[in-house]
Amino acid sequence: MSVLFGGDLCPLGLSVQFLEVPEDDVIAALHEMFGDVASTAADCPFPWALRRMLPFQAPWTRMLTARVGRWTALTNNGIDGGDGTSPGPAIGRELGVRCVVANHVPRYGPGHAQTQLEVMGPEGEPPLMYIRTISASATDGRWGWYESGAPFPFEETERYASRLKRYRFDRPMLLRYLAHLGIPIEDDVYGDAALHQRQVTWASREVTLDEERLTFGL
Image (cartoon, rainbow, N blue to C red; front, top):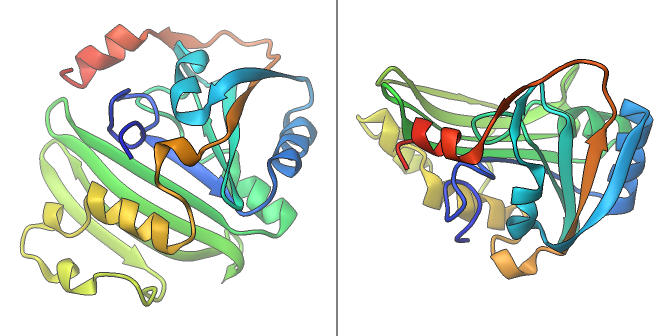
């Protein structure tokens, strides 16, 4: 994978949500959740359609969806590469399906960074239905490590004993874990994307791609 999670379009696509359900079901859930949403075809596959969501916003108003294998990829135009907390997890709970949230934020600013995987589903722990969480993150250069839930059989648990927390979970591991979960990690496997624009009454702070790239030292 050369585009998502800190790839060629960084900081676009640093956070992506995956729902184990057809894209039409996800789009219907978006319209049900947010009401007035204008959906249009992006006319190119998901990784290269990320530019259609610019500028970044806080709060975010744009989302992108696409088919990838048996999953639907979903992201939004939240600043710093997207907001991984919404709307995928809520849609997963509503539809009773698995939701995977993957984040890889390369080091930026005074030492911020993160690689994180969250898996939620019907068999998870109420109320948020978490099955497994793995996270190596840094704030101002200070690294932390967090995990909850039982490890999956494919996990490289020996890495978790590394003295340096930043080595315990990284982008290559994240991609391998996604593949084990059945989420294709090749750029050309993603279907054409659809762009979804929420019709809102509030004003959002907007950040251009160039401004964000400066933040990430790119």
